[in-house]
Length: 141
Image (cartoon, rainbow, N blue to C red; front, side, top):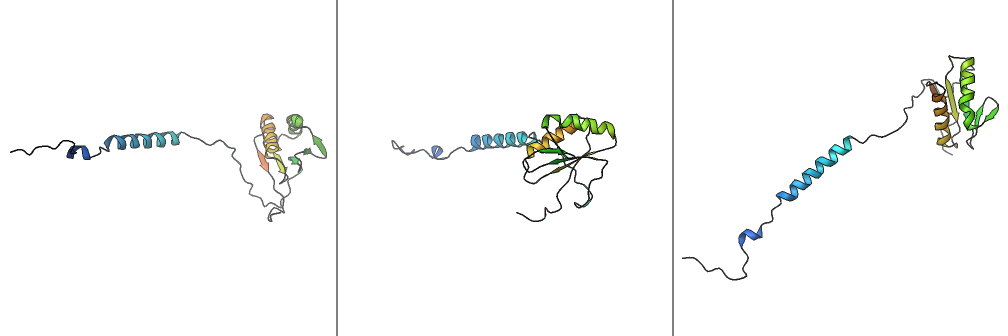
């Protein structure tokens, strides 16, 4: 004979928790994050390091641009307005078409100024840009 079922007694089938839908959601989220992470791309500038030692002085035939510690832009012995950098680079490049741009920033100058000078050089049609370092960059101040 059958045993009578007591009222309010838990059924054995109700005791189990079905984890299958939760695992499906977790795997779908995992696949979503893997796929979206593959399409994220960092934006930056490719910088080619020079092969010469840092003590090497750039030659006179190159276009030397110095960025001072207060982010002033110097070409030769003249302070240049940031909006006039492209015109000066174009003029100097017309005088010497084989010249490349050498930028020598001070370590306390703003990166924004360095990027502005690099953009002006590229707008002037010169893509061969070098960044010179000070010879005393070994120690921290």
